[in-house]
Length: 287
Length: 157
Image 1 (cartoon, rainbow over the protein chains, first blue to last red):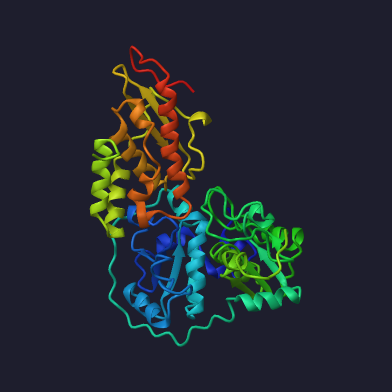
Image 2: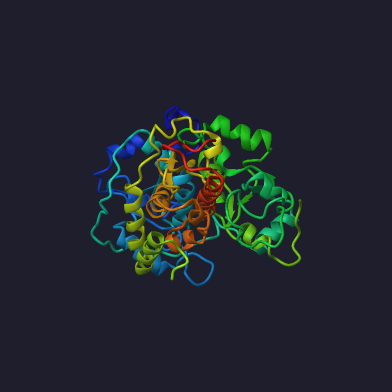
């Protein structure tokens, strides 16, 4: 795979290579954060010095369906030794699926000094780089969130409904069978309770993992991504765009791809996604 | 009396004692570390698709080899280097079910996955892990109709 800087991305600096990470393992200005779907992976071995951020326990409110509040986020940042000036580098399993999700949540709190390690755990492991079971401890920091601002990055259901009525640009990043309504859940995953199958009217079907080279988990080049999103599916970069999936995790990966790699200036993630839309009363659905 | 074979009941009891997800994770990783892949005298790569466990994203395979004393010996392969959960469950199944008659192995419920993993089960893994138990049951059921070999022979595809 070509160097990140040579792939034609609009914001290449949002990705760092495994080489870059290996060179910054001791950098006090950098905090490596592993976020996985598999809760066992971090404990079984991680990039030396990396901390673990669990998407369910650390980023989601445990009672209401929302992300943690500012105080809980501040406690998290203090625990992992991050200040507003720290460069947070996310990586994880499943082609950085959950790493991008954590990255997206950090954006809600204004922590924009963040990167993603291209290729994630898969590339690090394939390169047979060191994995450690030592859980690092960093001096607690004082971190103050100015104010969580979801609006630039997150779409809510009423906004999505208006967006549909206005024939806005929607991207459904689920599998083709979920998009068609044949399945109510991901292949090999449990049904999480949507009552109706199908997709939000007008949404284009572009499964999230199309952005990835499956052999090493790296992102495809800008030209390859443009072919997938802009040529084959006719997405217009200048148009307001909303991406969704099932609970907003796969679509955070597409949000990352479109916003930073292809430079869509106005893209939001609808994290209510199909587990909300597929259960709403009297909203339009296409099959 | 437990509805599970003795060794499996012991394993489940041990997991029952660990209520904290982090403790349970360490126990699972410990089992994963003990995983030994199928030996070459039983199977070699590329492993036959007939032994692949459906729905398991870690590309896992299972074998049940009938022993001269009419018991089974289980073997597994897990090709995904990140397949910690699959390796942990495979080790548990081998340690707790190998040495039992096929009739007993064929009755093990996939419910044990929930009892073992609880909060440590990730969304994409639950069905694959239950599928591993079901695959072992299916192998055991096939073995029930086979006579015990004079010597160890890998169960035919």
